[in-house]
Image (cartoon, rainbow, N blue to C red; front, side, top):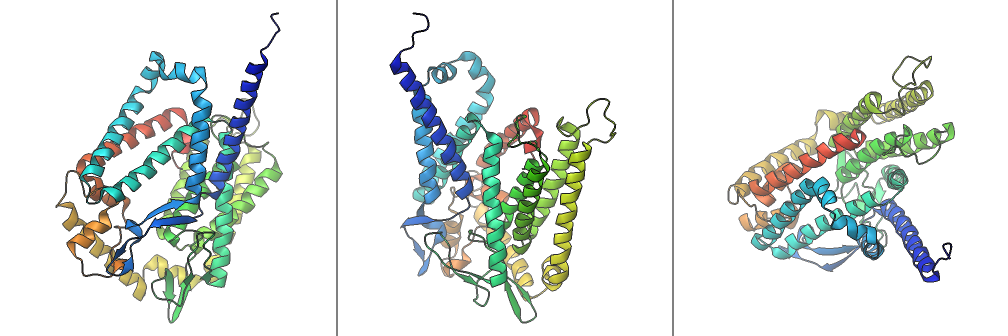
Length: 434
């Protein structure tokens, strides 16, 4: 009788296992498709006769996929007794109370900011995305195969890199509503281009609405690829066996990502990638036992000889690629690096104007801000005579956060971020550069 198992219990366990597998598969798909901007704009808004992107409401295809994952995760967890024990466990609460309190305070403030916002609808949509991100973070931390998820995200970056290379060489982005792509051509005014003489070179957009966003995404993916290459995917887990073939595949993918990053011509993304790579290598060399020599090993360096040689080979390949593109497209790189030319000077002038506009808006709402996501609305209310494309968020994320949620919100969010950083330092420093 002791070996008897209830058929109903077995069926429940099988169903839980199946749901878990489905969640894992959907998570991998979501991470791979995350860069694509396919969406349904269910509420379009206009300012001065032009489409107002920052005031319109959209539902992304990946957002639907995310909520399917959230619902399945909730169903799986709510039926798990261990989960309920952990929720009401005093010991568990003591372990996580600081982080929990930080999140509660942040959400309460964001709720208040919606009520006090210049537009509660816009702010609610903005905060709702933050809540979705928090749900996603919980699911990521609670599911297994973390390195495999990083791999799925990185593969999405490889696709974006290849896509960016194609766009740059064709000098055009073809519109496709099913892929969420808008049309871009270097000959048209208002596009992100590098101007040299009488030539206008279209910067790569990928599947994003701006080359700078593409560059930022690919900079992060390049750092993620380096982590995968070094075979330290987090928590001591490994996505695959550390074979030479695996490192060659990663190197080829990294070259695709690097090419897309270069053709975005985003200076901030270039700097971020360099800082991220240096930080990862420094962190791994000092902290990771995977790359340190075993006691008594003949190699006296910090990195194992095979890993170090492979890393040097990938570094050489990346430097050769950068050198080739720089020699081939030298005038374009010099224009961006030296900030010379009509468009570069115009860009600098616009940035200075943005700082002036920021100052005017901020001092009207210094403590609580104008409301999450409503900065462009505040610009319109401050001066309603401009064309819609002139109402742009200030290109500085810290100042944008400061003007939208004020000094109080900025302090709360900063403390939350600082606490998360301390957790990363304690648990896995490798993820700090990412």
